[in-house]
Length: 439
Image (tube, rainbow, N blue to C red):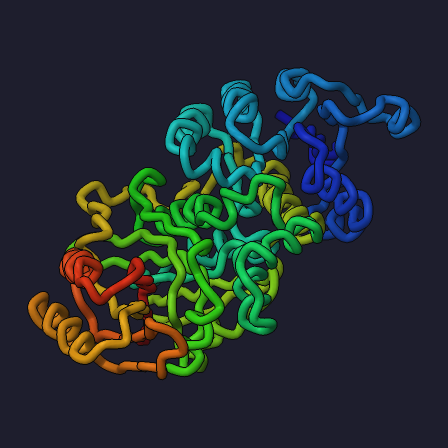
């Protein structure tokens, strides 16, 4: 590794799409300021990408090729930046780089959430750093905030809008009374959503990010497979309107909470009070609200994606590693997930065991007594009603909207099943969880 205090730190970039290209651009644009902060130049010496033409970089002095393993096996490269995305060859590229004793910076949230435990073990064995600030919430430094800035706190809970595509869709649906499919097509045209939008709209992308944040917040291993995940494709404009009438907005949230029962990790549409700052983060913006037992609630908000925002986090990680190299410190001082001694006795709760308030939209025949039947079922399962909206029928059916007090999810599931069995109920019940995030 580079130990010469006057020699520039050499970076190799694997993958040269939006984030990889943004990283090179930022290092070049802000190079002088970065050098002043670090006390040493940062130089991109190698790039591996299948989409680049070598001739485009012929005068740059950089080695450009298509094989990422040429980057990770180059003895002159100090830090490898992985922006390939996906699992293969990204996993093996990162693993090999770490095994070679190189520090790695990655923006790959799926890789960290699903295979990070194995990669962190290699990094620890080799005494090198695997940094991943850019994998969650783009330019918002939420990893550093959780791991370092709030290290004196016991984190009680966190909640975040951590997928800009989903937030854009819900914002457009709310402001312009548009259907989900219509707004999704626009998001794809604008480049906010992929041709296959499943990861964004079904909550998988947010679940990857929540898994990482919860691990750092509560000192537990990464457990993506235990994160409950629900998307937004079933949300209708009428749900957004009824929520507004009740004083709420609908946001697609990642929520993690610790209690005596265990740890909740869940991603789903959520009603939150319009008075909450989190409820007023619109468009493609991201925001994370964190509650610590000493500091209370703190909010982190900003751009969650894009070349500049994500590259900002990538280069910040490079600078952090560079500071260690300049100081002659090989192994990372701060553990990757924040804990030298992680908790081994904290279990992740099944979604059926969590408690929440609920919004229910029930489509029923416009007949006498149907509301009494629904109320009786809720009472049978120990679920009390906080508010009801019942509109006049404009056809043979009428929407009944109910806001409940807190109930156990398992009981709510049974109640919904019983309601749907009523002859007078003509469609599946729409259920959205409600969170108040009390301080």
